[in-house]
View (cartoon, rainbow, N blue to C red):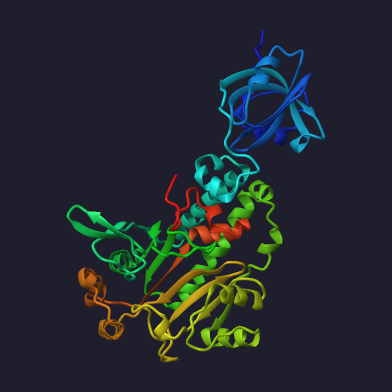
Length: 433
């Protein structure tokens, strides 16, 4: 005598196999529930999808099914049947119901506003939108790691706490470190430029902290930073790696997150314009283009978000590199272009709908030039003077860049707010839950 075991599966397998009459056992939570006199319709979710389960009044599980509330956890066995009105066109005719936990009245419904959803962020993560977003984010992170390893880069990490700032004052979070002051890192920049003396090619994906009181949809105070640094690299090498990362990640997401993109209703035609090499223009060309299109801007001004988004739109609604910014707009470690004095060997990669996606440069290798730039800017490195050892002992040409993971993930998902691409966003007004 053979015993037929009911296979415990994720919901997506039911829809892949589409075997009418086959019994499945699924574990999950009540996503939606509708109770009628003679039927209970339960839409069950797990991390892979949703499926409708029906219990009729003559089922021995009918009374238990009526007790359920949204987000109650359960184990259900049912038989597959075709049902055009059900999500995905199939449902389970309920056979067995085991209640794991009956949830309390769920505090999220369609009437809650963004502020209340923020207060209940730990529960809002259960929404299909956030589940899909987190899966795409995971693919983005994995793809970045995979690409860098294929290119021979070594993953390293720098401290999140430092005795001095790396980029400067007002945007730094100061914290108490025993009886001293410390600062949350804005970037691994200073460490990276010293790492390359040992590893030559290094990268990190880690949190960075910016005390910016910005309330735009594209800023958070804590974000995940993908940063790259390579010895012997010039600006051209830097840009090629940056654009290859973008293309590699997008290709990976399109291959592995088809269902998640469908849940988010992402129009995949947005990816068709992402063709390498990306358009390359100079800062001067960008200024001329903006003026031509009615922007109130002049040479020497920094770009605002609207101008960055505009440039991406004017150049084919795709990614565009802007190079050779005036030195006055750049950090002291950005190199100067010998072919275009007064401008930097730098780039910003601008993305449609978002603006700046990546900031990178070929660094200044000459210690004396850096010291002149520091004095001119009135910057005293103080406890960060050790950073200059990268120039004192075997300085070499090198370049690198930084990419905000959340901005990139938000662009892929078609979000108009970066906070939808991070599990627990931190803003000037929110640091909980």
